[in-house]
Amino acid sequence: VQLVESGGGLVQAGASLRLACTASGRTFNRINIGWFRQAPGKEREFVAAISFNAYSTYYRNSVKGRFTISRDNTKNTVYLQMNSLKPEDTAMYYCAAGAFGITESSYDHWGQGTQVTVSS
Image 1 (cartoon, helix red, strand yellow):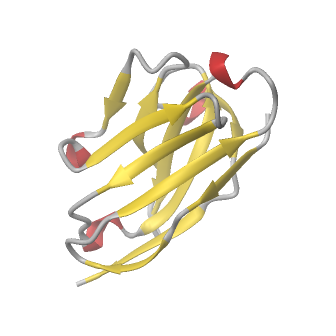
Image 2 (image 1 turned 135 degrees about the horizontal axis):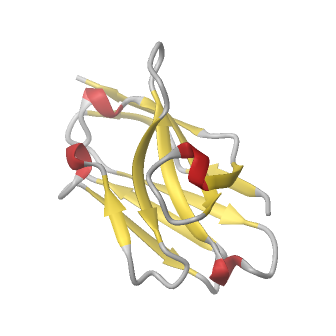
């Protein structure tokens, strides 16, 4: 499966962005998707995940209540709605496909990333 992220950009603190992860292939509705991010000089970290049927979602604590992950299997797309953005959310955001988990090793396929920059 190939993944393409979009929707990143430069915004001010408090603003919102919606990232999209679009996948190729006919088995999208059987694939779990995770979002990760990597800030300059830091390790990549888990952000959110959604199961193939959207019954399960999981978030890192620092984004709970601000970010929402969802999916539209008819469009082969997973979304990450990010509200009340903070400068510390600045990072390259990646989506990944694989098992439902919070570690990088759970995922087999990765996109190229989309940059999110939040100014103070």
